[in-house]
Length: 483
View 1 (cartoon, rainbow, N blue to C red):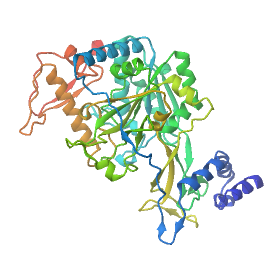
View 2 (view 1 turned 135 degrees about the horizontal axis):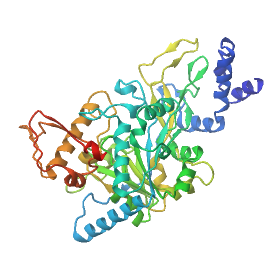
View 3 (view 1 turned 30 degrees about the vertical axis):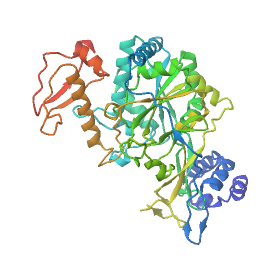
View 4 (view 1 turned 120 degrees about the vertical axis):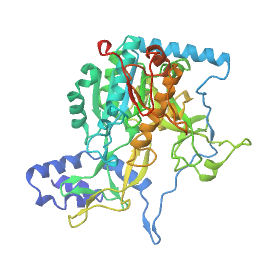
């Protein structure tokens, strides 16, 4: 105990033991275990670099270190511009299919979030998002992987990164749903790392008298978590070469994209990313840039507004493409980053509202940000890669996340976009879809991934005699005998 008190004194965190004597033996042991898991040397450095001192004028924001003279990154178009490019894309799609068939591709979802902002009590991945069947995000992705496995004749292992807060509930949800038809041996759960949360003076917050405030270290922490959990070793044993990375909140995501995989492989890229044209200069998406000859992402909050609003002679944005957190990572690249047993992606500061207790031990729920969380971002690995490619995708095809309870990025806008995509796929397959005066589908259509994961596959499987009427709810699925 004296060793712990001395340690905390050396790092100016003595307050963590203020209520120690009030705790029973179980909570005392738990608190000491939490303290023992903190890297105080690392934390002190982060506080020095990311948490400014309070001055006479109040809290001063730290200055962001913006790379000098960024330029726009090269982007591969969503659709090839000429026959030469079309041939390259065909070869890439074929190569991607070969890698999937050979069992060289794994899926990896970052799913540590809770559904609190959605008014949902549970892991975000358990939240129902589809317009008719209200399938969970996990179910949508699982069915895509099951369908891709059947299409290419090879099971696709799925690595699911949870958090300390939702790991048990996530595992239970998968078990209750019989893993959505996937083999249990092909689903690998592991938890992300945690970082202490500090106030604006650098003091670690307590959420209870015996409970330290921790937060996930961000999606960039997934690389350390892959290594620490043994998931990376499992991939190596299975012969996985490419990791298809995505985040849990985007039901339009194509979990396994043979074109994206094939382009990555043929370019011998360590890492790839998908980009969408930004809806406006200040859209809250990271910006793809070239810095010192390397493709990187500069966060929307870090890119100076003048740069964000800069345009070309034709009026288009100079920095016109945003990151949607969809990547391919080479397994060997991740292993190379982990050669020192720890990936050194930088931490970023995020100011958040964090419930805690005040110095008297009374619970406090802040109305404004009161805390600093330290997060890593996966895109910070790109400058460490020998080669990176960025592929444009269409917003309406692959990006409509469920992040908020209302407004843009909500369940309402995402289900709208899911129906729109289903209607386009259905029409491209030769089936008429009724539309209202504004051109919106006047029927609700949901397509099971088991029937089709893209428009081309739907054209192969849909009943050409299907009739859809206004106001109808149409769920397109494989016949039960073929599932």
